Length: 288
Image (cartoon, rainbow, N blue to C red; front, side, top):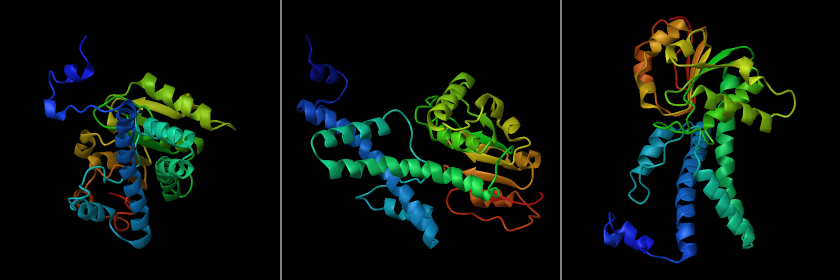
């Protein structure tokens, strides 16, 4: 019978196959995902500092990423991480710390998750406050429901939590994702709402529409919310979308996909200056 080491050597260079004890192997996997998630939460706290001071988080992350000791990966501020690995592995790490009496270490890693939760909540609150503190019966188009691009995986997706927060305020959601099925989307939203909103929960089936065309999703909407970094979202004709939206119309870019200068050049006769409000969204005002 072959050992795991021998199997891996069939296609992995021998010098890259490492053998360790069981605990080292287990912790290496948990720590790798925990540290990647830590970088995401770290840059999201930096985004908050930039908001408070007037700095540009994109410029800050670019400069910091040029430091060879740090590097540029996982330094893109966003609405937060999702998926099946990061949170699960951090929770496993927290459990191990607690079981070994490492209370302070467990609290340290728990903060990575808390910051991620905070980022989702902040994004939802930004949407609501920017739209005059009410989204009730306002149509909001959500672009992207998968937790990241190029997958239909919705586990711990930020879109689910942002959608839940907007539904709690009785917004009407029109959701488009190129991979996620209608059945999966409704299942996730219903489960999230049932688990977290105990008093007077919103009716997901009444307030949510699944769309297969992003332009249809944006038609008649008050706002577009980008929650997943699908490449195709960069290529849309946002002027065409704006023409079909209600006024004032907003775009909340939770993944920093869109280029402000290019969007500005496609708009004219604005009622007020088009500016980048914080890092999290681009508001589009006035008649086109």
